Amino acid sequence: MVMNLQILRGLGCLVQAVALALTVNATQAQQSDVQSELNRLFEELNRPDQENWAQLESEIVRLWSRSGSEAMNLILRRGNEAIESGDLRAAVEHFSALTEQAPDFAEGWNGRATAYYLQGNLALSIADIEQVLSLNPRHFGALAGLSTILEQTGDTELALRALRTLQEINPNRPEIDRRIQRLERETGAADL
Image (cartoon, rainbow, N blue to C red):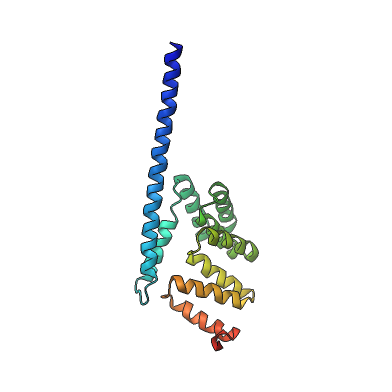
């Protein structure tokens, strides 16, 4: 009887291990599918004269907003709702919880960077933008925010570099061309 109980426990552990492996494989397959879709969308976004670039950006953001956890998705939604309602303190709290629970999820850092920016806390916003870009170097929203902050703080050369990087990702944003041209004139880069 004791032997049978040990065998059953061993089989139970084996079944749990197999179930976990299947879950991990399914999650990896989903991540691979999402990454493939993101790559396709970025290729389309990068085509010159792409008329529906705003829709492509929205679709990319929608995919980025999937954390893989319903609980984390809920915290992200609550943080975004707090920003929309103007409750920036609550937004920072939600996004801080998200970055603690899911530190590899760039959208938590991006949301908190936005909330900090709206609070006027540019240093903390830049620190979070650095996290976003380390996790997701193609994050056009973070690059746009970074360029704005750098321009506001007088670092026009770095702002120009951020805008040029943004332009490489999406050459179709008309305001980016105008900002680049203006900053090139201000920095003397247009003469190069």
